Length: 139
Image (cartoon, rainbow, N blue to C red; front, top):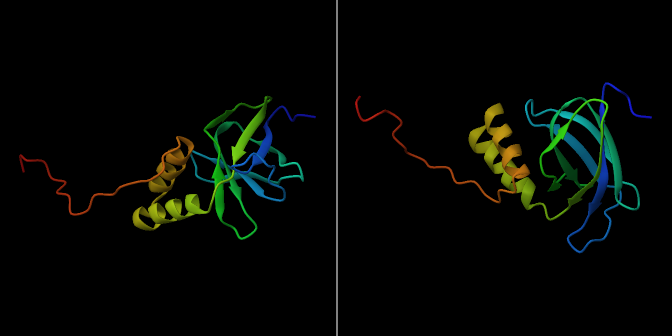
């Protein structure tokens, strides 16, 4: 039964060839706070279900070694609703490598939020300019 103060997000995790991914951890990351709001493990058929508070989320799929192997599109969750049929395709640990690099280079909450939003939008890489003069020409 759905708790009226929470939203339910459910779906399936698959591999690039369409096979279900069993025993993977699925985490719901709040895109505003950057915090994990819920977590569960996929069943043998790749199915999962997570209860979260109202907010904007990105689902993260984590393998047994703790590597981020997939992310979902942006999900807007409203209390008292059920979001069903979410499919997340797990890829390689390259997602974790990109997120880790951006976090090490930028290291702030804002940078982590940008990383989550970029992953939700399907951005594959980030370029960071160095030695950029930030003062206006009038100074």
